[in-house]
Amino acid sequence: MSKYTALRPILWTENLDDTIGFYMQILGFSLLERNDEWQWASLQKDQVYIMLSRPNEHEKFKGIGFTGSFYFNVDDVDALWEDLKTKAKICYEIETFDWDMREFAIYDNNGYILQFGQPVNEIGKAE
View 1 (cartoon, helix red, strand yellow):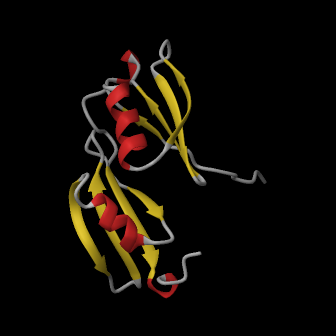
View 2 (tube, rainbow, N blue to C red):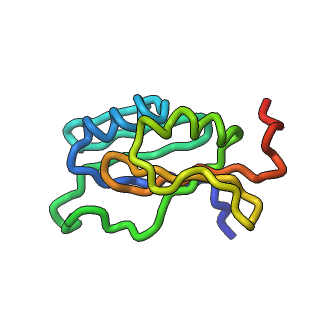
């Protein structure tokens, strides 16, 4: 049986420059590679990788077609909230939920929902 080694989502965007800027300037990602001919880019922050792409004509792009959110596990959710709460459009503010996760969510420049969470039992244990 095959072993899964990573999940690297490709987010569609009609403005590659703005989206690269959001992920680099607001979230602190680094640009690994960019190909303007393909209208594609790859970004990384720590162990998280995201690709960006302008949709091909055959993909019939009509805005966001993704019906979920992207959930990032982080090691200091409160510090990240303090950093992002004035830099990005808020989906929901930081809160500790019944399932023992402290989390919040923002929208990226395209409208994708980005959630950030940390297990309650790990808070205060960041290295």
